[in-house]
Image 1 (tube, rainbow, N blue to C red):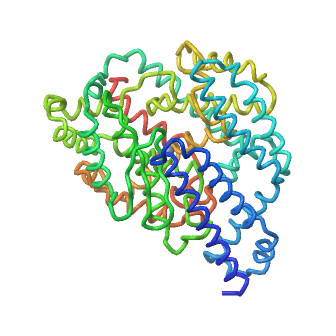
Image 2 (cartoon, rainbow, N blue to C red):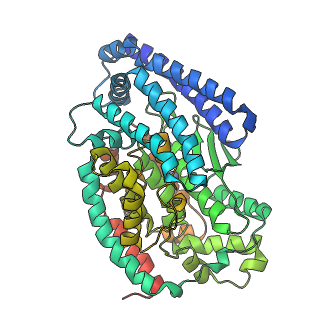
Image 3 (cartoon, protein in one colour):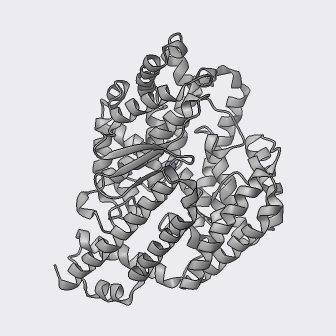
Length: 497
Ligand code: ZN
């Protein structure tokens, strides 16, 4: 290894350690921290963030990247490519603008919390205006794009363009709308009431723990804690943190939420340990990350084979509730399709329309083709058009998501891309693993875990997301496998055709 490459590794490892320390502070903030620590925690996170930014954007990193000379095709060549990309992007944004974005995001978050409580979009409007203005200034720091929104997308999904997402979403919408309409005609065919009622949290904890342990969670390398807004994170090999939240009146929230986060955690846990403490040692993009969580949550855990095993677990933990409920009734219940107001509670089929709505509005916000004060109206009109749902107030409409309050514009599309990639991976994995269904029917996710590790996880950020998807599935991101999967599952459940 050249001296420059060695020094680059040393510097990047230190930055990675600082990031991990900041990540741990953030995990603590959302799981353990007493509320009065909020101010001091913000200072600590600010200091660490500043240290990381200074160290990473240093001229010396650029000199080391130029001098590194890694062997072509090696892991170090990927390291240099990814680090140069991150370094250039970070240096494009003046530190005053970066600080202003962070500050406006924090203030916007507070304004959003209050505005949502009062269902008062007008109270949030000045913050949103500020966030959009700053994002437009952020876009101006870059060049060489066709559409300003591409710059924002690229922060979450490297190399993805608005035009590509638009084409995918047009096809997705054309497939979803008639399927959902046909299901709506037969809405009563599925009864999900078995999932609602009295489910003591202690029982749910035992259930969730049992399920994630069967999937690959282990106490010596993982944690599972409570959080108001569930997430998964990792601070290096052997340290994956999952969170979930419990609703004593609905057993699906904690169970499926934990399986979702398990998918994220598994991805991080199976990145090649040799990539640890480098920019390559984590998931490659939000879309690919979300494909992992949704694969386990929806495709596996709402799929017929695994749902049978899951039903057995529920029967053991809650015999009085599930004693008289058959596997098939449970499987149908967890796949109920119901157009609704709230994205995070949406089923697998309607979810995509919630995302398409947000993507369209975000593009219009950045292009200036919708006046921000008209957003509630634009939102409500699309909810009516796409889902047939009337929005009673902005708290459950345009104000429902946290993203825009913090300036996260360009993020939403990755959720739906995750669903598409998950279906493509599933198609491939099933072809490669003929015994997959019978393994999952026994609650055994080993083979699938191994397959994902081999084809997706181990590479971390070695390949750009586009290339990773191509290598793992044999094609670019496509809509057709997802629609085929949804139709194959939902049409028999609802007795369509
Ligand atoms: Zn997720």
